[in-house]
Each structure stands twice: as C-alpha cells, then as structure tokens.
Image (cartoon, rainbow, N blue to C red; front, side, top):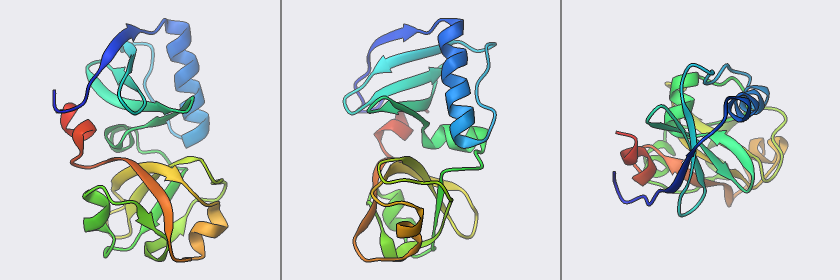
Length: 163
C-alpha cells in the first residue's frame, strides 16, 4: 500500500453492512455494495475506511459515511454532486480545495458540513470527494473563497492505496 496507514481492520456483520449500505443508498440515490461481498471497516490517519472486498470504496468522516472517489466511480451516485468548470480540474486533481468561482452546478439539498463529490462539466467524472463549507445556494452563487475542503482526490494516497 502507499503512504496511508491502516489499522484495526474489522469485518462488519451482515446486519451492520446492510445498515451502512442502506444509509449510503438513501444519501446518494444509488445502489451500493450488497451482502455477497465482505465489508470491513478500518481506522486510518484522517478518517475511517470502508473496504468492500479488498477495495477501499468508502470513508467515514465525523460519523458520516460516504464513498471515496473509487466508490463514486463504481456505483455512480445521482445526488450530492458539485460540478466544476474545466479550468478547476487540474487544481482539484492535485488536491486543492474547490473554490467558489469554479462551481457551475450543485445538487439541491446540500448543507454546510455535508460530504459531496466533485465532477467536471465535460465528462461528468468524479474528481474528488470533500466537505462542503456552503449550502446548495451558496455553492451556486460563485462567491470567492473556499467552498469545498478536499478529502480524497484522483491520484492522492488513498487513491494509490486502492491499486
């Protein structure tokens, strides 16, 4: 594995895995992992990780579960997205936080403090996962300053650990 430190990996019971999957499905509007695959939870340096099989497909930050970039790419959620223009793509894929002027669109129902996934306007592909500092209207307003704090992006240590 890459530079990420993983410890205390524990297999979830079927009931716990089903509850976690149900919570993610309600949040994101897409079917995620099912009972046929083993689901583990492990501690990491910044947040807890969710393993499905041997892939890191989810994370738990401050008690809130969400998908990693690999999880978003696999399960294709329909909610909790923020779309950015192509000018922001190189910065976000290098781990920068998302700034307000680069946002083109935001899903309804996002509140400040919610976990969201960031996609580009051209390909609609996931670039990063982060914590929103604004609600939906605030994200769409294009106000200057940070709008989303990046937690996981394409090419970071968590992405490389999944290879």
